[in-house]
Image (cartoon, rainbow, N blue to C red; front, side):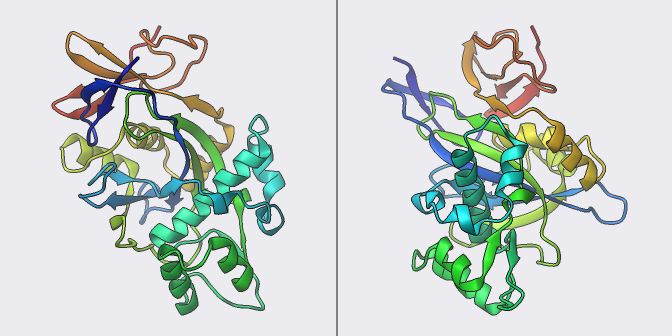
Length: 304
């Protein structure tokens, strides 16, 4: 039986052997928008509160767990663009994909106030309006469901705007595990920058991927490996259009990093790495492993 591993971003501590916890289904949104002047596209990142039980202090993309309300069958009628979403990932279970898309839209609204919807023009309850702000607060407090808000305000989640990018499964040794679908989308027009919810998130910032990577390399910010790897991929693109084209054309890979220890050196291996134990046929571009040095993960390429 494997050892349980816990820790903050970049630090794994081996504890006593125990059963492998099942991963919780989750979704995250990589939100991109045009950069200032001729700068590369900006990415929205949120800083989790330092005392959070998971990834405390780390900068993450908006997102969270898929909950029961996201699986309500009424979304099949209310959400807009389901056929296009399914066509973007035809190999995925259709219901499973819609559940994750709804969770992504809901979490984005909860954490930032930004919302990917097509409003009923007759109701005119716009994202960022006083009513929308009030609804966000009630949703955070558990006083109303996201489904109820969308029905009352005439909001149709625009799930066709979400481009599935990848699926990351937390290593078996972590005390909290997630099976997370990463979506990419362009930021909603004219809805502001978004604001931290003050509950789980203490700050929200827009920045080019390359700038965030520079701060990470300097030890100024904390990033979990999936966030680090995704930002590395995004840093290659100079426009929102190119990001979206890349996301549309990319294969929808399931990435399950494997913890490997060699000569007291901890590594997280991805498919295609020379030491990855299974799925040798699967190849990915970019880094194939993360190596832990002084409590921080560093990307490396070591292929079979």
